[in-house]
Image 1 (cartoon, helix red, strand yellow):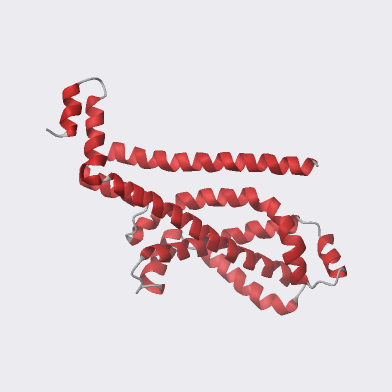
Image 2: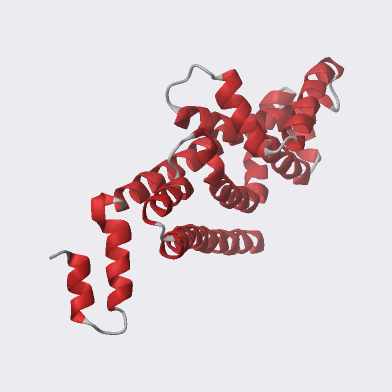
Length: 242
C-alpha cells in the first residue's frame, strides 16, 4: 500500500490533496528537481549580478570620464553600441545566441547562462551606476585633482565609494528583476526553478500544485529581498540625517 493510498484511506477534507502532493513531488524523488532548480537559480542570479556589476562599473566610468577626455570618446562610442544592442534585443534571444553560437561547444549551460545574463544585466547596471556617479557633487572630482590624483584615481578613491550609497537600492531592484529573469534559462535546457517545475508537470500532469509551488518559491525570495531592501533604505536615510 503506497503512502498516497494511506492518505486517501485516512479520509478528511485534505486527504486527496496530500495524496496528490505526495504523488507529484515525493514519488520518484521529484522534489530533488526543485532543489536542483532552486540552487541553479541562485547561482545564475548571483553570478550574473557579479558580472553585471563589473561590466556596468567599467562602462559607467568610461562614459563619465569621456565627457572631459577626448581620448576616450572611441571607448564611449563602443559602450553606447553595447548599451543599444543589449537593451534592444530580447533577453531570451541573447541567451540563445550565447548558447548556440558564441559558446556552441560548451558542455555545461550554467556558465554560459551566467555570462549571458551578466552581459545583459551590465547594460542596465551601467546606467544605474552612472546615475549614482552623477549624483555625487562635481566638486569632488576637483577636490581629488587638487590633491594630486588623476581622474581615474579620483573616481576610484573618492567618487565611486560615495556613489555606492545612491545606487545600492537600485542594485537590489536589479537583483530582484534578475532573479525573475533567470526563469528563461530553461530555453537552453538548464534546470532552473521554472524548468524543474515544468519537468514535474510534464511527468505528473499536475499543473496546479507544481506551478503554484514554483510561484510561491519565487514570491518568497522576492519578499525576502524586498525586506532587506527596506532595511537598507532605512539605514541609508538615517545616515543622511547625521
